[in-house]
Structures are given as C-alpha cells and as structure tokens.
Image (cartoon, rainbow, N blue to C red; front, side, top):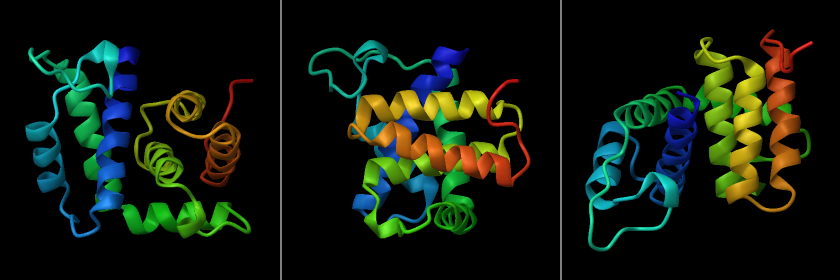
Amino acid sequence: MSNNRRVGREYALKMLFALQIDQDQTESNRLIDSFWNNFRFADDVLGEPLESIDVPLATASRLFAEKIVTGVVEFRSVIDKKIAESAKNWSLSRMTAVDLSILRIGAYELLYNSTVPAAVVIDEAIEIAKRYGTKDSASFINGLLDKIAKEVGVKPSPE
C-alpha cells in the first residue's frame, strides 16, 4: 500500500506542478482528466513517457493521487496560508514550483488526512523532494512540514 501511496503522491506532484504552470486551471476534475488523458507512465520509470506500450497504473495509486489533488485545490487558500505562516522570510512566490507543490501535498495530508501519520507524511515529502527538488529542497520541506505538524497538534516524528 505504501508504494501505491508514494506513486500517488508523485503523480499528484506532477498534476499540481502543471496547475502552477497553467494557472487558469482551477477546477481539479478538469486538471485530473487532462493529466490522465495526455500522459502515460510506467510505475517504475515515473516521469518518463512510454512511446509504444500502455502500462496501467494501480487503481489505488490513481485514486490516492486524485484525492490529494482534489483536496489541495479545494483547500488551497487554507493550505497556502498555513505554509506562508510557517515559512518566515519566504513568500510563496519565492518558492520553487516543485517545492511548493510538495509542501501543498504534505500540508493537505497533515491538515485533512488524519489516516496517515505525520511522520509518514513528512518522510514521504522529504523522499519526493530528494527525487524532484534541489539539493536544499528536502531540508526546507522537512522544516516547514514539521512546523505545520506541531502547529496543528499532530506528532511529527515517533517518540
């Protein structure tokens, strides 16, 4: 299940990144449909389009990605406010699109998905940041999500 969720989070990252590029897309269903209709990816080579074959995505990964994207779009103003409050001396406009997308996913899960432990949310965000972000992304995202977790009263790391 965790692999399905990781894959789902990575697809959500790609959709939310696309949303930042095309800011006219404010409806999550249209964004999700456009993404699934235009991209074909293999689970093991996430991010590399397949030319000749169609590899199906696990249903659990797809549904989890859609839940995240729909939630982030629906609660974006609250999520962005929480990120901005936690990011002293950093405006959202100064953050890279990848980092901001990862932060939105993590903040959404911390605020609205209590079924996933905060430590898992933060660890997943760090791993995705290492894969897609800059050399400083993982520590930046770790610090902000840890702060958000503490502010909303969830334990950010196991004791």
